Image (tube, rainbow, N blue to C red; front, side, top):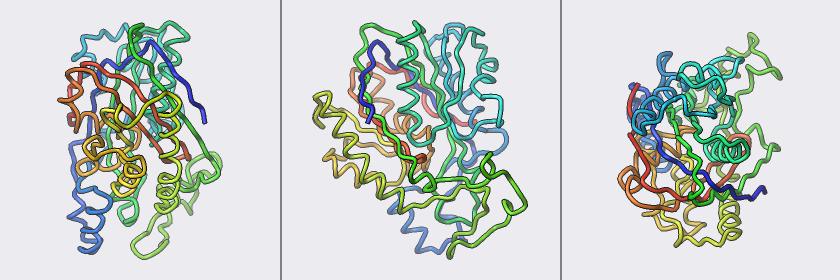
Length: 351
């Protein structure tokens, strides 16, 4: 477990973007009425925003960044680092972050690279950006986190298609010697990498004729090798086993209790899963917001989406101590405790 603290960096503001198209899990007649009702109740997802070719992850992140620049009066020329945290990059190569550097009018002196993480990506992205800002003297950084998971799914897979939504986000980080510490606890375990995987399409297994053949895995679960495959039971067991000790170790190492935390914002994986984690950690429900109902699981964007959907008023005025935790694909998980003050939060808008 990597437990460490980074000083002198604060979050200035957050913006997010979702596609205009909305799908409701109540409308899927290929899932029985009873199954739909149970899914909405236990998993917690009613509607999701679904992408098309005009609203890819990079498009939504770029639009979020432009909205954030305007809201914070930040000139793009001031940005010294751009990270694109996503598993939905535009091309196999080059890096989407480098394309976004030009697209957003950032200087050529700007560091730019992709971080191909999903569920844990926002927390890891904060750690990478804050570390680089401290070691290089960069004063402002742009953390873009977004995914279009729906484009890797197939409608005939009831185990995954109704869960995921699409979104992009932008977070502006500033170097500030008066900022409180960011305290991190990060972990990885690749032994169960197949729990969330797209089997075909990489170098290990390129796209072949077999990749496009739909196979019935079980009743109601028909997918192709090029589609995302999710083992829900494995992910549930991993999350409820590993996330609570990760959070407890973080709080113990830095002397925090649940009373010190104003809000505990988890990756929006699954309502039943997240509630099990919340109860294990003994956080009161009023401190744990959810955006699952309206946005689904938005992968790397789920923490910023939840902040904007549920806590815009609370975090826009005054000081707050937040605990953020991301966990999933990899398997990868991590948590951070940080302070915020008068965040600039333009909101969630549609592209």
